[in-house]
Image (cartoon, rainbow, N blue to C red; front, side):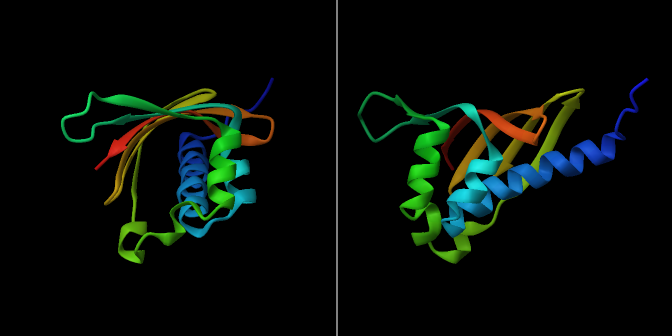
Length: 127
């Protein structure tokens, strides 16, 4: 028989992964970003610019690590580095999270892997 983790442990681990993801972005820490995202990450931004037709910005784990290596969000003012994490649901090996910050509104899905919780899906837009 396998012991199940307490829900509070899962919530804390999910929140820690999401914290790593955002702090990695804002501090240009590519190694930390790579640990936070699953290799199969599918990230989509819903972008609207003035009168242009809206479109998706598509990213992968490799592109996120690359953008983070290049500076990521570290060039943004420190006041924009704040974020609030709401762990919406954790069920066995999957989780759903909403993150709100001065610049992003992001919905994340995570999976528990042998290495820990990792972000597998992201849908975001500018705040």
